[in-house]
Length: 129
Length: 284
Image (cartoon, rainbow over all chains, first blue to last red; front, top):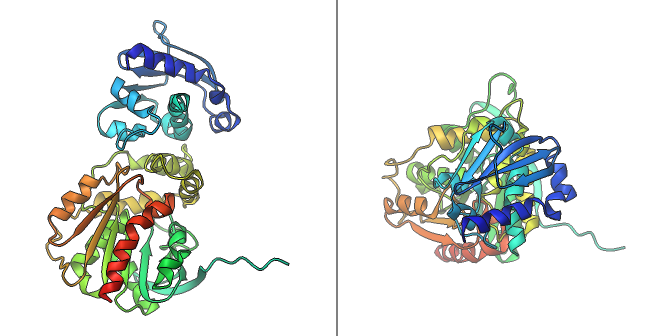
């Protein structure tokens, strides 16, 4: 799958009803930040306020402040979003362990909202089902 | 009135001397026959084995026993726990297992342990193998590469229960039923502050067994190592590498399970465990 297709899939998932599901919003109720998701070379700015995605777009405005960046190779995101991801490619920590994904920025913010972020980043998998 | 629907599991509190202190340890058991002592994973408790204790195909031949280690589940920390922190060591872990075996008067039990329980099974096989009828290491290896910073498990500005569960959630296979995945993670959410991290002291700092397992005699005590394909913490390759240095150790890679086979997908786990238990039973 090409970078543009993965990008479209991610942006679509962030704007989907699943991203507004009550349980997910509740899980992210204390998470407010602008953060980056990189798919291959393509950055995406995700703007989140109290568990609500208020915007997600495949660009990064010049000098825009962000607190967190999660960058994966195309292979990483493609594998993570398979309907049933294969062993060793099925979780962001499995991907960081194999060097296919990096997390940078505010590690307290990341760990304090870890399940919320994992659930968000897994949403494109639901879209593929 | 409908009949009372009790499960066959019976839980009691056991007084056990550990590390020169009397500890109150919660023990559950079901079944009759060859004793099988079950060791839970780091940061969790004996509820992980509830499915084994409710499986009549197992309990009609085996007495399945699981206990909460001190600091875990319904076992309190030892008296005076407020002074000093909790760090599990290899020495203490071996002592806990042998003390519970002695307190229960078990005759050469089978021990099955998962994760840190799998690691200590290797240590038991090496140092005290003759005391056991057979040993089963689930998600067991002599060493595995770290994949996160354990300091995040015990801080004032990150909820310990939530981060522990979120970290290990990726170790559950995607095929595992949602109910059992959630039960498995709930235990991590319920752990006491710093306890998961304290267990991992054994795993990360004190329990590197590479090159230290040359005394294992699988002819006397068979050693079975079962590892789930979705476990990226203790990978099947970690287990195979470990077994390669232990003559007679048997390795089975389990499909469609992760790091918590007995609790995350009990139906899938029993497909792999029952043949092992059959062989142990046949040996008598």
